Image (cartoon, rainbow, N blue to C red; front, side, top):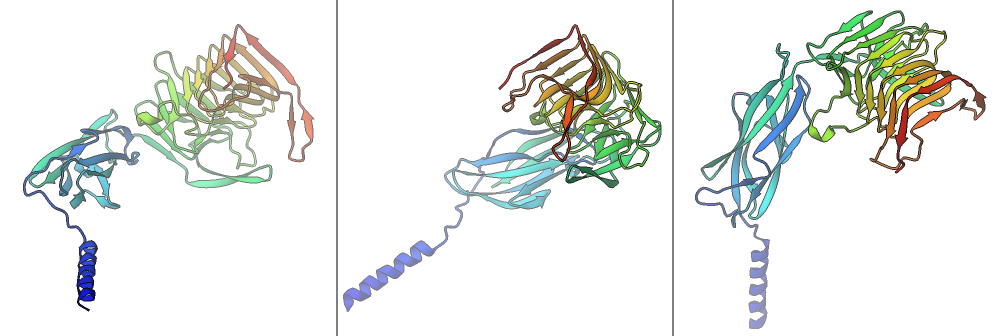
Amino acid sequence: MKTFQIFSTAFLLLICLFSCKKEPVLSGGKATLHFSNDTIMFDTVFTTVGSITHHLKIYNKNDFDVKTNIIITGEDSKFYAMNVDGISGSEAKNVEIPAKDSVFIFVEVRIDPNDINSPLITNANLEFNTGGKVQNVDLVAYGQDAYFHTANTYGEIMDGEDTLRFWYHELDCNEEWNNDKPHVIYGYVIVDPGCQLIINAGTQVYLHKNSGILVGNPFDSINSGGTIKVTGIVGNEVVFQGDRLDTWYDDAPGQWDRIWLMPGSINNQFNYAIIKEGTIGIHADTVGNNDPTAIIDNCIIENMSAIGILGQGANLKVNNSIVSNCGQYTVVCNIGGEYEFTHCTFANFWNLNNRNTPSVLLNNFYEDINGITHIRDLQKANFVNCIIDGSLT
């Protein structure tokens, strides 16, 4: 009986020992934290548009657990927000970090609209107070005001058996974009039939995911016509690119859709333009008359996830231009049309995934939704003093 009592007492004591929750052994004085970076830097962020989220890792290399209070300070602190343990705000109290462990903080920036046309800088700090010791991590963001072209309605287009929904915004007829501020496109902007969009030298155009420019209105019963004129000059080019400006997105393809010259769109001009990081650079669709669909001079089209220039029954004249590093083709001349390329370079050294397609494709047929092949011969496809090169991966 005595043996049983001793055993029971010992067993209960063990249960109590192992069921007790270990309380943090906090430092009685100041404790030092270590950080993955001493500065969190945000590249150019457009006003009113939140940046991507950056993270900071906080290390407790001490032999004891600590608690720290974190607050965003500084004259520009209102532009920043953090998330700690799933809770967002500008302050987090009593954040526990076990000994020899670490935690993450996620930070984003949102810059209010302003009247400054040149880039501005906002500075703030993440302040950590740990047992009375104060440490800081700098927060720095470059912001810029912009013109925003945001989709406000949608239309549907049949693509075979699929229905595609396009969110779009119709531009004013004969609209002109200048270079005093960047232009940011959300969704698709439409240049209506009989209208034109002029983009002047030095203009920076940023396009969001699944965004593009439609020259012609596919939702209008009379959708022929529509013109875009890109009037860059040497040293002051017009640039079309994705709107993710952090370094990680440099040269990343597929960030936006395309510039689409719809059926009947005529007399389009691209001079000294840089078109990059989209899905298709210029998509020139079937033309119903003898006027050129587009004249493309002194342009660079690069890092497209699919095709650099896609012509479908179009009339294209391309001079002194470079098309490079596309996921499928640099150029496709498809289902008829007239094409003249002079002093151009087509170099496809795409290496982001496997590519087994030629750099340049000429095609004289298409297959409809019923699997029936239709022949549509090319009327002209001239390559004068051009370089075609590449490698398969």
